[in-house]
Structure formats: C-alpha cells, structure tokens
Amino acid sequence: MTSLAHSAKGISPAADVLPEQPLSANAMPEKILFVDDETAILDGYKRLLRGEFDIDTAAGGAAGLELLARNRYAVVVADMRMPEIDGAQLLAKIASQYPGVVRIMLTGNSDMETAVRAVNEGNVFRFLTKPCEKELLRSTLNAALGQYRLSGLQQESLGTAATSRPRTDRKKDAGLVEVEEQVQKILAFKSVTIRPPSIGGAIYVGKTIWDGPDYVVQSVAGTVAIAHPKNLLDNIPQVGNVVKIEYNSGIARVSEVV
Image (cartoon, helix red, strand yellow):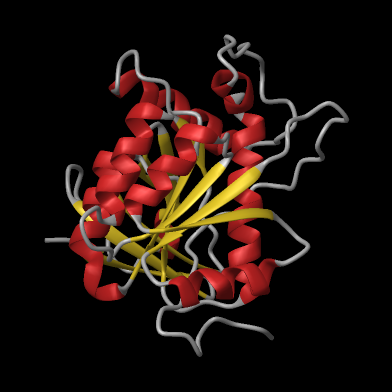
C-alpha cells in the first residue's frame, strides 16, 4: 500500500468517515488546497492523489492566503510546522475569513499542545498525525468533502443563505440522538452535531463536555462532538478536561492533554 512514510513529513489520520456524496451536475468544482513550506512534500501529495482530487498547493501560509483570496476551496490541509505563519495561525485566519472552508491540520505527536490550539482557534474538522497511508488520507479528504456538501457550506461560500433541512441522508443511533438532545440542553442555544467515533483507528483531541450513563461526549471541532461509548474507554475523563482519546482495534486509550 502506497504511503508517505518515506518523505520527511508523513501524515496519519484521525477521523470517523462520512459517506461519500455524489456531486450534482451543476455543482462547483470542489478543490482542495495543501499548504506546506516544503515543496517536495507538496509534490508528493500531487503524485499520491493524482486523478482522484482537484488539488492546488501553496508553499507556506502567506502563499496559501493569497490563493484563498483568488480561488474557492472546499478543503484546506495545512502542516503545523511552518515559518512565519504556522498551521494553527493559518487555519484560525481561514476560520475567520472563509468559514465555509473545511479545515484539516497535519501534526506530529510532539505537537499535541499546538494541535489543541488549532482545534480551539481554528475549529479544525480533523487533525492528522504523521505518517499515514494513502487510503487513510483519501478517506479523510472524502470525509471533509462530504462535510462540505452535507452542511450546506457550498451555498454559504457563494454568499447565499444555507437552507436548514433535516439530515435525512445520515442515519443516527437512537442513543446518540438522546445524547445530542441532552448535550444541547447543557449548552443552551448552541447547536451540536454528535457523531460516533471511528473505533478501528482514530485519534480525537478536545474538551470533555458531558458525562452520561453510557457515553462521554467530547467537543473536537466547533459544533462537532464525538460520543465515546464508556465500555470502550480505559478510563473516564472528567468533564472540563482536554483529553486525547486514541482508538486502536476497538479499544480507546484516554490521556489528559496538559
């Protein structure tokens, strides 16, 4: 299986994957922007994903912002460690200036503190640790494009009001529906979308916002939260703590982020 492990920087995903959604005949092209200060890495992404996604690349945060000012993107994937404008700063700017863009962060395990900052400041959809296999990167990009379509962000980026409609295209476990209702009550008027974790292999970092009888709910990106089944956790995080929950073959290891 093809991977980026041979390069100076790799990536590794952490995500529950949304189902791929077909484009309508009149939909705008859904472009993905990769931002990294190393051109060799950017060339590697182009080779790895050629023919599967519409990709642009930018050598650094400033160049990325210039492209965003001239083009419409569905997804931006930014490396954490870049000079002048790091990934967290870049995604925070994008969240403010282009809220319709789905944002993904690339980071190493040693960058956990800055990854948490990216989640809090840039409202990232996913953060990926390095290195990773091609298929895992592909599934994460498809999940991001699915989020872009399903949430109505394409209409928002075109300057039109996104129409509120029921999410009939995704089935949800009855237990998660109840969890979502309880969490929304706790957070008053804030709307939260609750998702199950990808228990086969994923990493989630965020604040624990609810401890229920069967689930622990963790806020991971803006109004997105993950409902972790308690029977899979090796210990139960306290409400208010920022934790990393890492799944491996159905078992979740919980560690507090300092």
